[in-house]
Length: 292
Image (cartoon, rainbow, N blue to C red):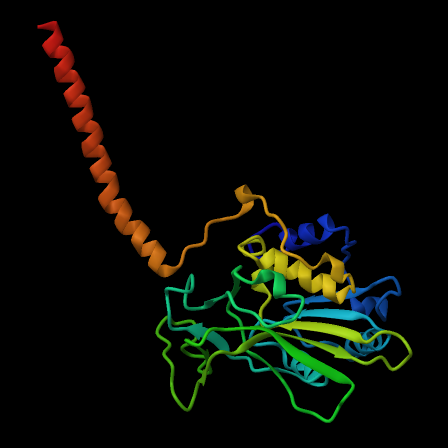
Protein backbone atom coordinates (compact mmCIF):
# COMPACT_ATOMS: atom_id res chain seq x y z
CA UNK A 1 0.00 0.00 0.00
CA UNK A 2 1.63 3.24 -1.15
CA UNK A 3 -0.84 5.59 0.55
CA UNK A 4 0.31 7.61 3.56
CA UNK A 5 -1.13 5.10 6.03
CA UNK A 6 0.39 2.11 4.19
CA UNK A 7 3.68 0.30 4.80
CA UNK A 8 5.31 0.26 1.35
CA UNK A 9 8.28 2.28 2.68
CA UNK A 10 8.84 -0.21 5.47
CA UNK A 11 8.63 -3.16 3.08
CA UNK A 12 11.13 -1.44 0.79
CA UNK A 13 13.55 -0.81 3.67
CA UNK A 14 13.43 -4.49 4.60
CA UNK A 15 13.81 -5.82 1.06
CA UNK A 16 16.77 -3.50 0.47
CA UNK A 17 18.44 -5.20 3.45
CA UNK A 18 17.94 -8.57 1.78
CA UNK A 19 14.88 -9.74 3.73
CA UNK A 20 12.13 -11.69 1.97
CA UNK A 21 8.85 -10.04 3.04
CA UNK A 22 5.63 -12.02 2.58
CA UNK A 23 2.06 -11.64 3.90
CA UNK A 24 1.01 -14.20 6.51
CA UNK A 25 -2.57 -15.13 7.41
CA UNK A 26 -2.26 -17.47 10.37
CA UNK A 27 -5.93 -18.46 10.24
CA UNK A 28 -5.29 -19.88 6.78
CA UNK A 29 -1.80 -21.36 7.17
CA UNK A 30 -2.49 -23.02 10.52
CA UNK A 31 0.98 -22.07 11.75
CA UNK A 32 4.11 -20.07 11.05
CA UNK A 33 6.11 -21.56 8.15
CA UNK A 34 9.38 -23.25 9.10
CA UNK A 35 11.40 -20.91 6.89
CA UNK A 36 10.05 -17.81 8.67
CA UNK A 37 12.37 -16.10 11.17
CA UNK A 38 10.25 -13.08 12.11
CA UNK A 39 6.55 -12.25 12.27
CA UNK A 40 5.50 -8.57 12.27
CA UNK A 41 2.13 -7.66 13.77
CA UNK A 42 1.46 -4.25 12.23
CA UNK A 43 -1.29 -2.47 14.15
CA UNK A 44 -3.82 -5.30 14.67
CA UNK A 45 -7.40 -3.98 14.59
CA UNK A 46 -9.35 -7.10 15.60
CA UNK A 47 -9.01 -9.74 18.28
CA UNK A 48 -6.93 -12.78 17.33
CA UNK A 49 -8.42 -16.22 16.88
CA UNK A 50 -7.22 -18.90 19.28
CA UNK A 51 -5.38 -20.82 16.51
CA UNK A 52 -3.47 -17.62 15.68
CA UNK A 53 -2.14 -17.05 19.20
CA UNK A 54 -1.39 -20.77 19.56
CA UNK A 55 0.64 -20.63 16.33
CA UNK A 56 2.60 -17.62 17.62
CA UNK A 57 3.21 -19.34 20.97
CA UNK A 58 4.64 -22.37 19.18
CA UNK A 59 6.70 -20.13 16.91
CA UNK A 60 8.28 -18.31 19.88
CA UNK A 61 8.82 -21.62 21.70
CA UNK A 62 10.95 -22.90 18.83
CA UNK A 63 13.09 -19.73 18.86
CA UNK A 64 11.12 -17.50 16.49
CA UNK A 65 10.78 -13.73 16.82
CA UNK A 66 7.87 -11.29 16.83
CA UNK A 67 7.76 -7.52 16.26
CA UNK A 68 4.43 -6.26 17.66
CA UNK A 69 3.37 -2.72 16.69
CA UNK A 70 0.34 -1.93 18.83
CA UNK A 71 -1.78 1.22 18.44
CA UNK A 72 -3.99 2.42 21.27
CA UNK A 73 -6.46 1.04 22.03
CA UNK A 74 -5.18 -2.42 21.19
CA UNK A 75 -7.85 -5.13 20.83
CA UNK A 76 -8.32 -6.89 24.17
CA UNK A 77 -7.39 -10.31 22.78
CA UNK A 78 -3.92 -9.08 21.85
CA UNK A 79 -3.60 -7.30 25.19
CA UNK A 80 -4.26 -10.61 26.98
CA UNK A 81 -1.86 -12.51 24.75
CA UNK A 82 0.98 -10.04 25.34
CA UNK A 83 0.27 -10.07 29.08
CA UNK A 84 1.21 -13.74 28.97
CA UNK A 85 4.68 -12.56 27.98
CA UNK A 86 4.74 -9.96 30.78
CA UNK A 87 3.96 -7.04 28.47
CA UNK A 88 1.31 -4.54 29.62
CA UNK A 89 -0.54 -2.29 27.17
CA UNK A 90 -2.46 0.51 28.88
CA UNK A 91 -4.48 1.87 25.96
CA UNK A 92 -3.68 5.43 27.09
CA UNK A 93 -2.18 8.00 24.71
CA UNK A 94 1.09 9.81 25.39
CA UNK A 95 0.87 13.62 25.21
CA UNK A 96 3.68 16.05 25.76
CA UNK A 97 3.57 19.54 27.25
CA UNK A 98 6.49 21.00 25.31
CA UNK A 99 6.20 22.22 21.71
CA UNK A 100 9.97 22.83 21.66
CA UNK A 101 10.78 19.14 21.56
CA UNK A 102 7.89 17.79 19.49
CA UNK A 103 6.22 18.22 16.13
CA UNK A 104 2.82 18.13 17.81
CA UNK A 105 1.67 17.30 21.32
CA UNK A 106 0.60 13.85 20.09
CA UNK A 107 3.91 13.01 18.41
CA UNK A 108 6.64 12.08 20.85
CA UNK A 109 10.18 12.87 19.72
CA UNK A 110 12.71 10.52 21.31
CA UNK A 111 16.37 11.49 21.46
CA UNK A 112 17.55 9.52 24.50
CA UNK A 113 17.60 5.75 24.70
CA UNK A 114 18.45 2.82 26.91
CA UNK A 115 21.69 0.89 26.78
CA UNK A 116 20.62 -2.02 24.58
CA UNK A 117 22.57 -2.73 21.39
CA UNK A 118 19.47 -1.99 19.27
CA UNK A 119 19.42 1.69 20.25
CA UNK A 120 23.06 2.41 21.10
CA UNK A 121 23.88 3.55 17.52
CA UNK A 122 20.98 6.04 17.67
CA UNK A 123 22.44 8.29 20.36
CA UNK A 124 21.90 11.86 19.20
CA UNK A 125 19.38 10.80 16.53
CA UNK A 126 15.66 11.53 16.85
CA UNK A 127 12.90 8.99 16.35
CA UNK A 128 9.25 10.02 16.02
CA UNK A 129 6.20 8.27 17.47
CA UNK A 130 2.70 9.68 16.80
CA UNK A 131 -0.24 8.57 18.97
CA UNK A 132 1.84 6.16 21.04
CA UNK A 133 0.71 4.30 24.14
CA UNK A 134 2.84 3.47 27.19
CA UNK A 135 4.06 -0.10 27.58
CA UNK A 136 4.95 -1.77 30.84
CA UNK A 137 6.80 -4.92 31.85
CA UNK A 138 4.71 -6.92 34.28
CA UNK A 139 6.18 -8.40 37.40
CA UNK A 140 5.85 -12.14 37.48
CA UNK A 141 7.22 -15.43 38.67
CA UNK A 142 7.95 -16.66 35.15
CA UNK A 143 11.74 -16.64 35.21
CA UNK A 144 11.86 -17.91 31.63
CA UNK A 145 11.04 -14.39 30.38
CA UNK A 146 13.47 -11.48 30.64
CA UNK A 147 12.47 -8.00 29.54
CA UNK A 148 14.01 -4.53 29.17
CA UNK A 149 12.90 -1.04 28.11
CA UNK A 150 14.28 0.19 24.78
CA UNK A 151 13.06 3.79 24.74
CA UNK A 152 10.57 6.08 26.41
CA UNK A 153 8.88 9.47 26.40
CA UNK A 154 10.20 12.71 27.86
CA UNK A 155 9.80 14.00 31.41
CA UNK A 156 7.25 16.58 30.27
CA UNK A 157 4.93 13.95 28.81
CA UNK A 158 2.06 12.10 30.40
CA UNK A 159 -0.34 9.24 29.68
CA UNK A 160 -3.74 10.77 28.99
CA UNK A 161 -6.40 8.45 30.39
CA UNK A 162 -9.51 10.39 29.39
CA UNK A 163 -10.61 9.08 25.98
CA UNK A 164 -12.83 12.12 25.51
CA UNK A 165 -9.97 14.65 25.50
CA UNK A 166 -7.01 12.72 24.05
CA UNK A 167 -7.40 14.05 20.52
CA UNK A 168 -9.25 17.26 21.28
CA UNK A 169 -6.17 19.47 21.52
CA UNK A 170 -7.35 20.62 24.95
CA UNK A 171 -5.96 17.77 27.06
CA UNK A 172 -4.02 18.75 30.17
CA UNK A 173 -2.27 16.76 32.85
CA UNK A 174 -4.65 15.76 35.66
CA UNK A 175 -2.78 14.77 38.85
CA UNK A 176 -4.18 11.61 40.34
CA UNK A 177 -5.77 10.63 37.04
CA UNK A 178 -3.06 10.76 34.38
CA UNK A 179 0.42 9.21 34.67
CA UNK A 180 3.45 11.52 34.52
CA UNK A 181 6.36 10.70 32.19
CA UNK A 182 8.88 9.50 31.31
CA UNK A 183 6.98 6.46 30.11
CA UNK A 184 8.25 3.34 28.28
CA UNK A 185 7.11 3.17 24.66
CA UNK A 186 9.06 0.14 23.41
CA UNK A 187 10.23 -2.99 25.23
CA UNK A 188 12.00 -6.19 24.29
CA UNK A 189 11.95 -9.62 25.83
CA UNK A 190 13.46 -13.04 25.48
CA UNK A 191 11.68 -16.25 26.43
CA UNK A 192 13.74 -19.35 27.01
CA UNK A 193 12.89 -22.05 24.55
CA UNK A 194 10.98 -25.11 25.72
CA UNK A 195 13.41 -27.09 23.59
CA UNK A 196 17.17 -26.94 23.35
CA UNK A 197 17.11 -24.14 20.77
CA UNK A 198 17.61 -20.38 21.11
CA UNK A 199 15.15 -18.25 23.10
CA UNK A 200 12.17 -16.65 21.43
CA UNK A 201 12.53 -12.91 20.97
CA UNK A 202 9.96 -10.14 20.92
CA UNK A 203 9.95 -6.35 20.55
CA UNK A 204 6.73 -4.49 21.35
CA UNK A 205 6.21 -0.84 20.34
CA UNK A 206 3.20 1.19 21.48
CA UNK A 207 2.41 2.46 18.00
CA UNK A 208 2.49 1.32 14.37
CA UNK A 209 2.21 4.70 12.61
CA UNK A 210 5.91 5.47 13.12
CA UNK A 211 6.52 3.00 10.26
CA UNK A 212 3.81 4.05 7.80
CA UNK A 213 4.69 5.77 4.54
CA UNK A 214 4.48 9.25 6.05
CA UNK A 215 6.85 8.46 8.94
CA UNK A 216 9.13 5.53 8.08
CA UNK A 217 11.86 7.62 6.43
CA UNK A 218 11.84 10.46 8.95
CA UNK A 219 14.87 11.03 11.16
CA UNK A 220 16.01 7.74 12.72
CA UNK A 221 12.80 5.72 12.31
CA UNK A 222 14.17 3.58 9.47
CA UNK A 223 17.40 2.84 11.36
CA UNK A 224 15.47 1.90 14.49
CA UNK A 225 13.28 -0.49 12.50
CA UNK A 226 16.24 -2.20 10.84
CA UNK A 227 18.11 -2.46 14.14
CA UNK A 228 15.08 -4.09 15.76
CA UNK A 229 14.74 -6.51 12.86
CA UNK A 230 18.48 -7.24 12.94
CA UNK A 231 18.29 -8.20 16.63
CA UNK A 232 15.10 -10.19 16.19
CA UNK A 233 16.57 -12.06 13.20
CA UNK A 234 19.78 -12.70 15.20
CA UNK A 235 21.82 -10.66 12.75
CA UNK A 236 23.34 -8.33 15.31
CA UNK A 237 26.15 -7.42 12.92
CA UNK A 238 23.58 -5.42 10.92
CA UNK A 239 22.78 -3.13 13.86
CA UNK A 240 24.16 0.31 13.02
CA UNK A 241 23.38 3.89 12.06
CA UNK A 242 23.11 3.79 8.29
CA UNK A 243 23.87 6.54 5.82
CA UNK A 244 20.71 8.06 4.40
CA UNK A 245 19.96 9.82 1.16
CA UNK A 246 19.48 13.45 2.21
CA UNK A 247 17.10 14.09 -0.69
CA UNK A 248 14.69 11.43 0.58
CA UNK A 249 14.50 12.81 4.11
CA UNK A 250 11.66 15.26 4.76
CA UNK A 251 12.41 18.22 7.01
CA UNK A 252 10.56 17.88 10.32
CA UNK A 253 10.12 21.05 12.35
CA UNK A 254 9.08 21.50 15.96
CA UNK A 255 6.26 23.87 16.85
CA UNK A 256 8.74 26.59 17.85
CA UNK A 257 10.73 26.17 14.63
CA UNK A 258 7.55 26.45 12.56
CA UNK A 259 6.67 29.69 14.34
CA UNK A 260 10.14 31.14 13.76
CA UNK A 261 10.01 30.13 10.10
CA UNK A 262 6.61 31.77 9.65
CA UNK A 263 7.73 34.97 11.36
CA UNK A 264 10.93 34.97 9.33
CA UNK A 265 8.98 34.55 6.12
CA UNK A 266 6.71 37.48 7.03
CA UNK A 267 9.66 39.77 7.76
CA UNK A 268 12.39 38.62 5.37
CA UNK A 269 10.46 38.22 2.11
CA UNK A 270 9.01 41.77 2.12
CA UNK A 271 12.49 43.08 2.95
CA UNK A 272 13.97 41.17 0.01
CA UNK A 273 11.31 42.55 -2.31
CA UNK A 274 12.06 46.08 -1.16
CA UNK A 275 15.81 45.52 -1.59
CA UNK A 276 15.39 44.06 -5.07
CA UNK A 277 13.02 46.84 -6.10
CA UNK A 278 15.43 49.48 -4.78
CA UNK A 279 18.29 47.86 -6.65
CA UNK A 280 16.33 47.86 -9.89
CA UNK A 281 15.35 51.51 -9.43
CA UNK A 282 18.94 52.46 -8.64
CA UNK A 283 20.25 50.69 -11.75
CA UNK A 284 17.56 52.27 -13.86
CA UNK A 285 18.42 55.75 -12.64
CA UNK A 286 22.12 55.22 -13.27
CA UNK A 287 21.43 54.11 -16.82
CA UNK A 288 19.10 57.05 -17.36
CA UNK A 289 21.80 59.39 -16.04
CA UNK A 290 24.33 57.99 -18.50
CA UNK A 291 22.00 58.51 -21.42
CA UNK A 292 21.41 62.10 -20.48
